[in-house]
Length: 132
Length: 72
Image 1 (cartoon, helix red, strand yellow):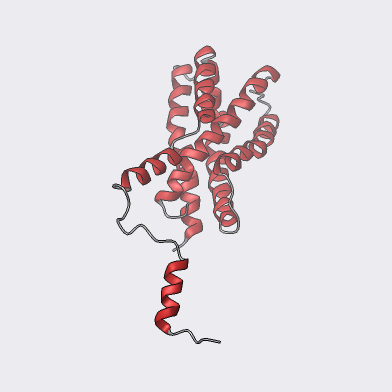
Image 2 (cartoon, each protein chain N blue to C red):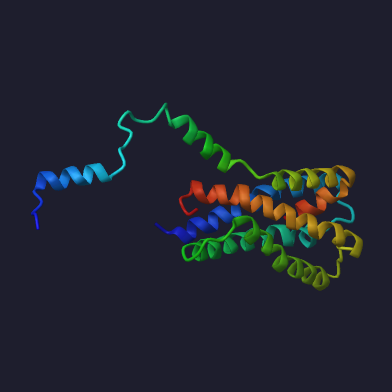
């Protein structure tokens, strides 16, 4: 029943679990809160990423009912959508976090991280919720 | 032209077909099935290498951990 709702919940689970870690890390980095605009930085990981994961997983479950798709590669493809979105948000807010050097290292790392996370965690969550 | 009886036909069929091993499998097959399932579920070496590379990069550049978390 409601497989796409379950797929959405399964997709948002992991990035939502990471959110408290982000807030904790930011709080440790800026113990006085000076120079920190949490709303500017956290809009991407809190507002966009979990929803993107949930919707991406809904699409995955829908596609998977028609053909076999490797979860890892499918998840890594999400980076290709989120990277321009993240850069666009930074441009719009006037707070560029990604320097070219950081992006050159971080982008392949994000691809690898997403690949592993989708292959071993999101796919497992999908199995547990019966939509795998 | 001779007519074949049912008994004769069965006898010819039995003779033509390869005899089956009626003694059953040589041992308990379940451990072998289990082993194959476990082997299929084990992550491939490339994934271990990728995970190790990610951990190594994070150790070499700890600032990347925060960045990755931020964009997870």
